[in-house]
Image (tube, rainbow, N blue to C red; front, side, top):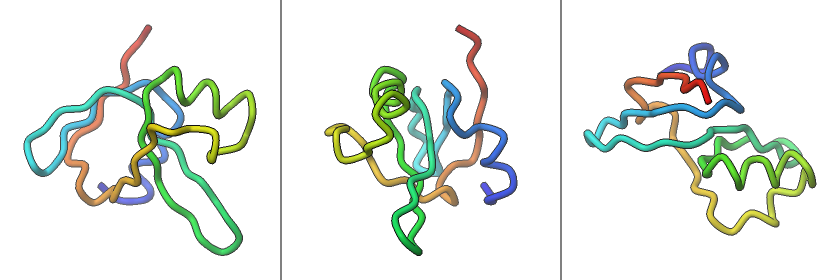
Length: 78
């Protein structure tokens, strides 16, 4: 998935299908640190914690995501 396409799904609870065939449910969001930017995947509850604190170091269960490995994204309405 390209940077332009992933923007439609950032910070929203979604189902993602990865190039490996695995499906995951959660939230992808962008973390910027200085000149570095990284996409991170977490559960919706961990993402809500991040939104309250704005400190990604407080989230233990975050995974760096290569957005090129995402082949499908679907927003989930909760």
